[in-house]
Image (cartoon, rainbow, N blue to C red; front, side):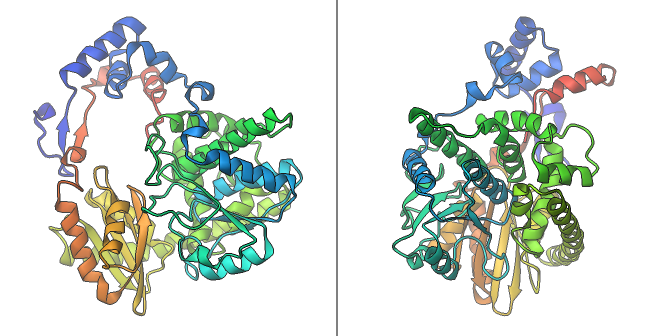
Length: 491
């Protein structure tokens, strides 16, 4: 039954109020813990029991940190990371060009620097090289290094890794959806491999790297060696988690809450300078990570030198950090200008052609590949349905998509590739990318629309709005706002 009689809101979604079980749980929470009814209603909807309220509202890493060994092959990966350290090997970190890749890469750089070992970094050019490892880069890097660590990419790098020199190992720390066959590499740690349990599928790459380093710390401690205090890395984990729109559940929520506390201390030079230049004078929140710092750090990877964000997060020089921040600000301004142009052209195209589709999509010649993902996100928000935006350079096109709860876009894109409708593609539930030709465009988009209409892909329950209850104006005050805020961050 629709809550308050709202069967269809302005965005076309049905309001669903608390069920009887939630009402009972909310009353129990309020009576046992003394929480105000609105707060109790929120906690009840989150399925928090009265006994777990205190733990939920005050999450501690030590209580919520998963055992890294829940990730297959994490021990093998840790042994390889430590061997590179012990043998003073030549290491290069191959990181994706977004915030998750930058934060994950920065953690590894910081970790090795603790032992006075300086790894090289390599971030592929979004436009020239595309997402993930490519054959040319792997060939060159493997000829100069003993270990390539791919972070936030590599799970689908099957062809690229064929070019790796036999004397060089490849280690993959990723979270993107895997195929039935893993790529050729020394070790892959990824909670979204086909052989994984799925218990930690919510982790982003920064979370995967953090748990891998936790395992490294255990091994080093057992052998009587010191290692960095990984709690100091939680600012990077929090930033990567929020910027990558990972769900704030389980360990992720603890990562973000504790990470925000670390971030407020402004210990990491690059982030301190970025916050200062962004006029962020108060304690940072998840909003600042997702809508202020994250977009700025993403900007260079979209339209400029892809390694600026990673270099800033690793910077230990004030002049260098200031210079990098100025460049990042300039690219962010330019990114906004390009984004606005593409968004307006995409909206005009959608208004003409696609009012009744189950997928919103638009394609255009010359659209910058660096902004199509942002535009897809804007379209997804506006139309409340999965959205894809594709830019073509001649006959070749690259697309980026964003999804809504209930539609696994990454899996659907992989299905298009298996069916031969696109050249390549992949991602995860809420975001994905693809490459295709102009000839493939309409067949691929039509097929994607078909998949979205099928019950196995689109969950109608996800198109409902869950309402916790009614709050009267007289009950609103600063204290209640603070208490509700403490129930988050919500994602």
